[in-house]
Amino acid sequence: MEFGEYLRILRSSWRFVLIAGAAGLVLALVASLVATPQYRSTAQLYVSARSSSSGIDDLVQGADYSRQIVVSYVDVAKTSLVLKPVIEALELDLTSAELSRLVSVESPKDTVLVNISATSTDPQLAADIANTTGESFSHVVQTQLEGDLSSQRSGVQLTLVEPAIPADAPDSPNTVFNLAVGLLLGLALGAGLALVRSITDTRIRSMRNIDEFSDKPILGGIHFDPEAKERPLVCTELGNPRVEAFRSLRTNIQSLDLGEGGRSIVVTSAGPAEGKSVTTVNLAISLAEAGSRVVLVEGNLRRPKVAEYMGVESRVGLTDVLSGKAKIDDVMHQWGKGHLGVIPAGKTIANARELLGSVAMDNLIQELADSYDYVLIDCPPVLLVTDAAVVGQKASGVVVVVASGATKKHAFDTAQRTLESAGAKILGLIVTKLPTKGPDSYGYDAGGYGYGVEESQLHN
Image (cartoon, rainbow, N blue to C red; front, side, top):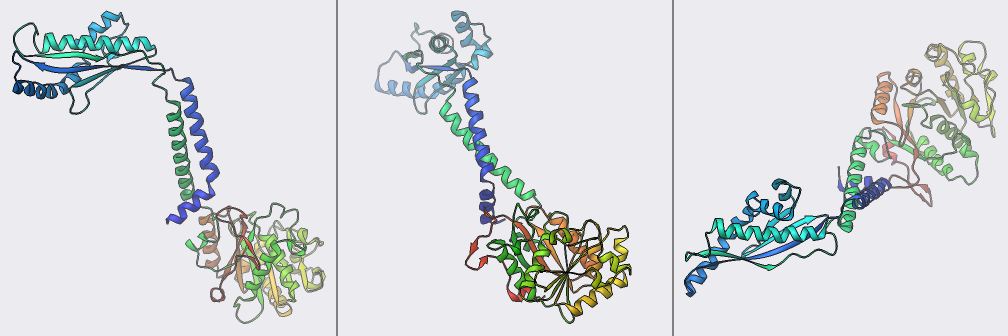
């Protein structure tokens, strides 16, 4: 995945990332508010080595010796040898191990200083623990570890140079720091989840990523319209911006190399609710408006929609013609200015596949292709029934509708293999429900949408 693709994913998921960041911010704030304030105080000791001699060499050796041993003193300060006297002196209800977790000891590098810090919910107690630990530590080092200073032997002197005092403000929680960390972690988690969701999401999102799994040309793209079901006939509306998209689709359909004979095209999709029937009726209207003689056949004998969208009577139709009960002229409805004819499905039947695969269907397609410039046949989704595959092998080719944000890649791949296995020629793809905003959207320009393909792509 290229860097630009990561940016596209983050742009499309920016609301999700911001929500995750806000959640991290809220959690950090809650954690800071419910946390018990902890106060911290520090006592500082100075370590020096002394001897009976006061020569310069002895002083230098004593300073070097102090720097060497002060590192080991850091570990001694948190032992029970030092902490038990502290517990007794302050009458603490703690064990040496528990008190050790409240005390920290450090020695700055290349110094002879020892900093003893204590943390407590009581600022005065924190200061008392730090000071008392410093006293106990000094006593242990001077009397038990380095010998008695009252003797004439070399010893170590620990001097309290900075006593601990009660803190005015709590050391933790650090609300500002916690909020910053919570925000950053939330944003990072949101961005990570957005990337994972995009990587695992198998839905087709835009016209761009179709190239990843299909070499079929894209004949056109139709942007999403939430009112498509209530107002399906887009091409009859003046000023509707989607009209230009169907005109671009019409141009690409007219450029298709369908070989000899009539132009009979099956329109189908992988699954339901992908905008197949709406696309078919508007393509038929657009072709007819350009002066072509068009017949629109409702090939979905199970859940027909064309008659409803076009507003024609559907009691008799394709099923009656295929079963020999009626002729084409008996069920044909002229629509608009006379360039467009509509053949509804008629009564829904159980043996739809048998009728669509019959010789009568072959004869019907041939007869219509001889009389019209374009025969558009709206068929059911490929993954639900095999009707589209059956009719597709009889027609000049098949156009597959793919819904952005709905059609899954494996579903389309299965539909494509099903059609090709049946001997149907896939002419190209129409992408519907394209977003109008965001990184996957396509804007308007002077000529309409930024859709379309080069002519060389159409003749394959």
